[in-house]
Structures are given as structure tokens and as C-alpha cells.
Image 1: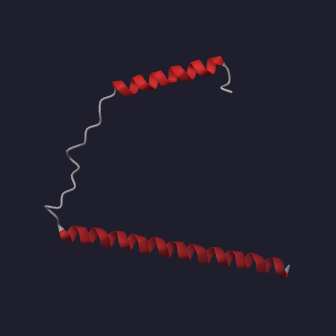
Image 2: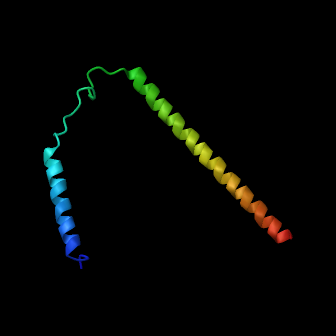
Image 3: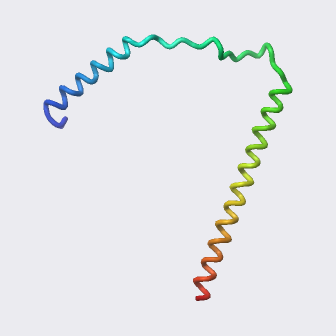
Length: 85
């Protein structure tokens, strides 16, 4: 059940077009600007980067806890008002 002869013909043509496009594109070459070397390492910058990342994680964790507490408080208030009225 391909939906008819036209669909099969269109799918075949699309496959051929994509194959030709793949063959005509240039091969990807790695850029020379991005290198990961361990020869020249600035330990202070790495420690600062790790500390910043840990600080951001702690801030995100604190924000999620505060949000959870607010949601629980609002839910509690709504339930109390429903029970009272």
C-alpha cells in the first residue's frame, strides 16, 4: 500500500535527488581552530570554569526547590478554601 503509482515514482525520484545531492557536496573537513590539547593547560581557568558550572547547578537546584514549595503552598491554599466553603 504505497498510495498509488505516482507516489512510488515520486519517492524514487526523491531518493535519486538526495543521492545526487549527497555526492555533489564537499566532504566535511575538520576545522583547525578547534583543538583539544592537554599540552598548554591553564589550571586556574579550568578550576574557575568548574566552579562556575557547579554554582549554576546549585542555583538551578535552589530555584526548582523554591518553585516546588510555592506550588505546594498554592495547592494547599486552594484545597483549604474548597474545604472551608
